[in-house]
Length: 175
Image 1 (cartoon, rainbow, N blue to C red):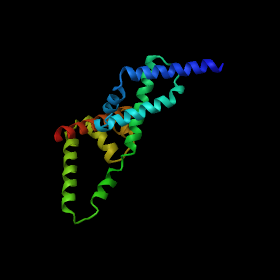
Image 2 (cartoon, helix red, strand yellow):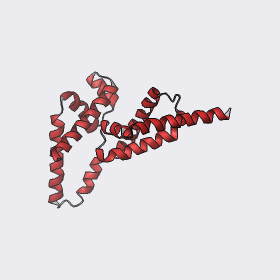
Image 3 (cartoon, rainbow, N blue to C red):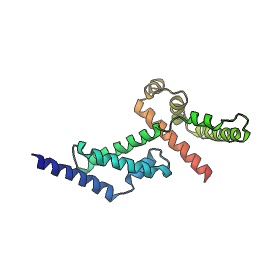
Image 4 (cartoon, one colour):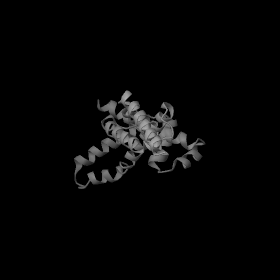
């Protein structure tokens, strides 16, 4: 009975390897579509591929459809984990202003914040309101969903779209 399990595992690994090998940029593109900066997308893709390889034994079917959905879920979770590690933006800003007499640092931070506000205000209401309620006010997706009479999934989607739009506007402005 152990031999068929090994054969099945090798089939799962082979299917995963074939999917990633047929489109090596797939996970990178998925990361970027989830709001990851292009500079960080390779790291996310590599981490997602490693996670998939390590947990391929949990996959129920090596067919292309379920494998694709499973791989996308791993990529999304990898992005979420990476973003959670970068959340304390306010702490980082406080660290930058170590010297209250440093006028140059203060001006640079104010300029960056002003630019962020311009980008946030440029968002359509459907994206801006959920973004502000979750990111600025710190409300959960369920709380925002109740306020706006939409589903929590829609809230998370709109916040992700808002983040991508803000990142795109920031990149367009610097280019």
